[in-house]
Amino acid sequence: MSRLEEAKKQYAALGIDVDAVIETLKKQPVSLHCWQGDDVIGFDHDGPLTGGIQTTGNYPGKARTPEELMADMDMVISLCPGMKKINVHACYAIFEDGFVDRDKLEPKHFEKWVQFAKKHGMGLDFNPTFFSHPMADSGLTLSSPDENIRNFWIEHGKACVRISEYFAKETGVPCVMNIWTGDGLKDIPADRMGPRVRYKESIEAILSEPFDKNLVKPCVESKVFGIGVEAYTVGSAEFSLTFAATHDGCLPLMDNGHYHPTEVVSDKIPALLAFFPEIALHITRPIRWDSDHVVLFDDETREMAKEIVRCDAFDRVYMALDYFDASINRIAAWTVGLRSWQKALLMAMLTPNAQLKELQDKGNYTELMVRSEEVKTLPFGDIWNYYCECCGAPVDGEWFAQVQAYEKDVLSKRA
Image 1: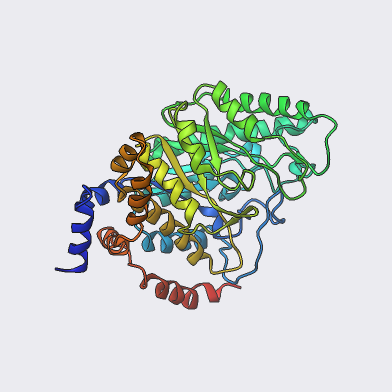
Image 2: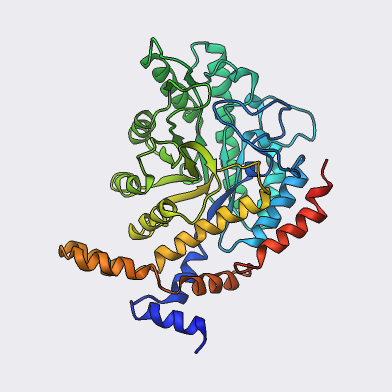
C-alpha cells in the first residue's frame, strides 16, 4: 500500500473522504494581494509609502511596472494550488492616456487588471487607497475637519465603487471592496468623537453611490494604531463593527493584525457569523503589532481556518491575504503565504469536526482533548502533496527551485 493510500485509509477511519475534501477545497477562492510584489508603492506616485503602514527591507528585484508585477503574480499562481482571486489597490491604476488623480479614476484605468484576471479565470477584489498621497499628509482623510480633503476622498471612494462593479460585471465574480484608512493622531486627542462622526458620514456618502449589492461587497476594516498615529485611530474595532452592523449590505472586515496582541480573530469569526450573513478577512501574521509578516502555517492561521470550516462558512467568508515583506524574495513570500493558508484550510477540512463537537456537547472534555491531539499526527503531508498534484501545483520540496531560477533569470536583471 502506498503512503497516499495508507493516509487516505487513516482519514477514512475517521469518516473523512479525502477526495471529496479536495474537490471542495479546490473551489474556494483566496484573494492574492498585488501589493506584496512592489512593497505597496503602486503606479500612481513616486513618493514613499505613508499612512501609518511601513515596509522594511530592500531585497533586489521588486516589480517596477505593471508588466513585471503581473509576470511575478503569474509565477506565484503557478506555484500554488486552489482557486484564486486578485486583490488590487486603487494606487495600481494603469495610465495609458494620461494621469488622473484618485478622485477621477475610471474603470478604463484598470482594464489590464481585468484582462489579467480573465486570463486566469479569476475574480477581482478592490481597495480604495487612502494613503501615500498629498491629500493624506495630515494623517486624516475621510475624517478630516477640512471639507475639501474629505470631499476629495469621498469622490475617490465613489469612483472605487464604480470600478468594483465594473470588475464584477467583467469577471462574473462579486467584488469585495474594502474601505480602510490609517486616519488617526500621534498623541492624545482633544476630540475623539468628532473625527468618528465625520468618518461615518464620509463612508455613508461613498456608499450612496448606486451599486448592485449582488456584485459589490463593501467592507469596513478597523485598526488599532499605525506608525505616526499611535495614540488614536478613528476607525477602531468598535467603530467599524458597529458601522457594518447598522448599514445594510456593508460587511465587517477583520485583519488579524489589527487588534490588541492578546486578541485572536479565530475567536471572532464565529461570533460575527452568528449575526452577519457574510464577513471578510485579511489574513496576515502580526508580530507584536500589525507588522504584516508573511503568513505561516502557525497556530492562529490554523485556528482561523478551523473556524471557517467548523462553521460551514465557505460561502459566507471572503478570504484575502494581506502582508508585505521587502526583506526576502517577494515571490517566495507570496508563495509561502498562499500555500500556508491553503494548508490550514485543508487541515481544517481533514479534521473530524462533527465528532469533536459531539464530544464537547456531551461534556466529554477528556476524550475531546485526547482526540484533538491525536489528529495532529495524522499523515497530513501526504494529503497536502496529493492536493497540490490534483491542482497541477508543485509539491513541497519542489517549488523553491523554480523561484530561485526565476530570481536568477528575471529578478536579478531588474535595476
